[in-house]
Every structure is written in C-alpha cells, then in structure tokens.
Amino acid sequence: GNSVTQMEGPVTLSEEAFLTINCTYTATGYPSLFWYVQYPGEGLQLLLKATKADDKGSNKGFEATYRKETTSFHLEKGSVQVSDSAVYFCALSLNTPLVFGKGTRLSVIA
Amino acid sequence: GAGVSQSPSNKVTEKGKDVELRCDPISGHTALYWYRQSLGQGLEFLIYFQGNSAPDKSGLPSDRFSAERTGGSVSTLTIQRTQQEDSAVYLCASSLGRTSGGYEQYFGPGTRLTVT
Image 1 (cartoon, each protein chain N blue to C red):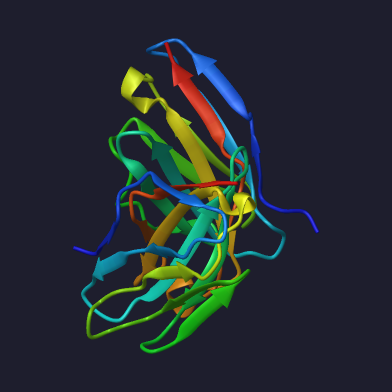
Image 2 (image 1 turned 30 degrees about the vertical axis):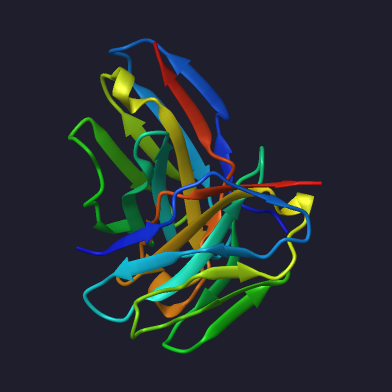
C-alpha cells in the first residue's frame, strides 16, 4: 500500500540552525507530495507541495524537492526561528485522501 | 473568508453512548474528508465525500462508524456504542478539487472526543 515514513522526533535546534526533516514514500504510482504543519493549539495547515518529479515546493523559507529516484521529499530550512516550533507532517496523495507520516515535532530554542 | 468549522470542539461521553460530530466545509468545496488523529496511530484517513456520495470509506475502522453528507455541504460523523479506543481528535477537511492533482485540503480545528 501507499505509505510515508518520516524521521522521528523530537528535533531540538537552536535559533538560526539548519533544519532537515527526512521524508520518504512508497506509492503505486506518482503521487502529489505535501508538507503540513501544526502549530501549538492550531489546526493543520499546508506548508508546501509538489505535484511532479523534480518540482520544488517552497514557503516561509522552507523548501522540499520531489525526488522520484529516491522517493523522497525532505523538508529543509536554512535558518530556523523560535516561531517554527511545531509538528511537521509529510503526506502523499495518489487517489485523493492524504496519507500522512507520523509527524516530527520541532522545538527551536533561543 | 470562513474556513472549515467543526462542532463541538470538545466532547466527553460515556462508553457505550452514541456521538455525532459535525463539519461545515468551505463554501463551494465539493470534496470533504474525515481523519482521526491519535497519539498511537498518528493521522488516519476515515472517509471521503465527493458531493453527497462517499466513493472511499476504506478508512472507517468498524461498522460503528458512519458518515453522511447532505446538500453537498455539511457532514456528520456518527460513532455508535463508543469505546475508549475511539478517543481521539477527529479532523474534517475540504478541498476544491482532487488532492492527487495538487489541490490543498483545508483542515478544521477538530473535535476532541474523550470516551470515559
């Protein structure tokens, strides 16, 4: 079946550090890929997406590139801020409903 | 504009009781989804509506769970004879088109269900 595997957290970083959250997927086809973020006390919201191989999604300084050859969609940010503290979910969609990874909790300390 | 709304925001119920959870999607969004978020299982898909029909019910965990959507808008998720393992946050989302085509799903704030 279709599945998403992302690195387990929690991840704790100092402000201005470089962030990578790994995400790999298994799918019977070519899915669209997403990163969703859940800030404390808030609902899930889309962070970025990519719909085909080699596409790069970007938003709020975050980037992720759809790599078909490695079936990956790693999330990166060059310089994290305290306000980036949240839970990040990698997800795929092949037949419309989203299939989510387990989530990675990021804590950024000043 | 208005986002996806869900009610109630919190629900505490006794084991064995029935509960109804409501979702109001964004106006004009034809697709509606229910998910469940729990500590042990992460985010799980439950059911998907396109208009009033449900082409994908594959995520419903048992026949105690059912959902309907009327008028292509409001949806109700019903859990009969609740069990403690049903305790979770139930999330509703809506989208303008197929997520597999890149359309964003917009999520509601969720209903936190606690079964005692």
